[in-house]
Image (cartoon, rainbow, N blue to C red; front, side, top):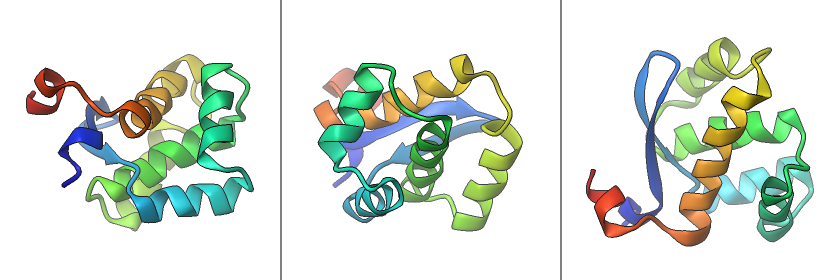
Length: 109
């Protein structure tokens, strides 16, 4: 059950579910060459690349049920060439949901 680690947020054209499932975390680690702990520390320290932010969003969309093609399309349209102040909070919230889980009231919303 992924309810406790699924973040829901408006992105691009509407509300979407984002979830870094185990396979999506493995893919993120493969793409970045970093373990999930190192990635999380980079996010907390605001020391990650724009590519990492985009990949967290893309893989979170896929883990949340969006097709890989639609996830790529959404990221191309709404996460590429955008201010990092727009993409960072979403990427952080996606990773934070996986790291700490959502509180019951947020998961129910």
